[in-house]
Length: 111
Length: 116
Image (tube, rainbow over all chains, first blue to last red; front, side, top):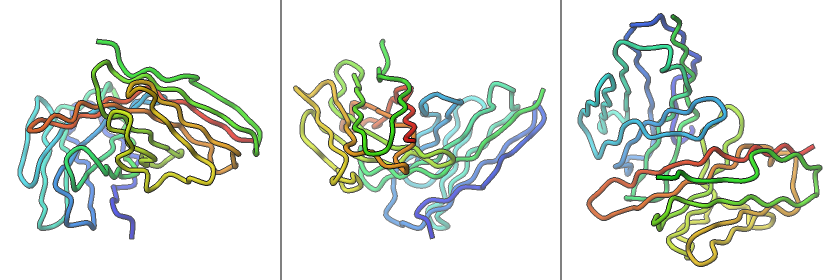
């Protein structure tokens, strides 16, 4: 079993749809959880950062962490074609180090 | 604010040759990371520097990969000799890692290496 797994994708949705992206993990020591967006031929950029369990909202994006289930989610409301990218979850045990990334889910939002 | 700079952007070499990548982090960022991202996979951490000291190099294949960070600023990653399986994008990232804040990593555009 890989340490961090994501829904395989690719995922295609119509513009305006609500998108749900998910990751599961096996290491119960992970405390810091991140979602990155990566456009083709670009480096990842941080979207959301959460410490421990709970929800966090930023504009159209909501991140949820359920440590008891070892499950994290990213929701995108009112999806736009510009949201078309690969979404990577990442997590770490310690602040600032030992980041482990999931394999990514490619999302296409169709106009 | 200038972002993380990397060069070259693309490199094609034959197996058993050597190659070096360069990274210039965001000014003032003490922490620097090198990642390997194979097509269809997430980035894998190779090495992490705090200033010019190594914090974590547990996943660096030390028989062929080496990295240094001179004067705690720029960094180079070298592969010698390269293998076919080294074909990947090599990403550099930097962060402030301030106590009590977020350890947001800022990534460069990456160097795409093809080993023939």
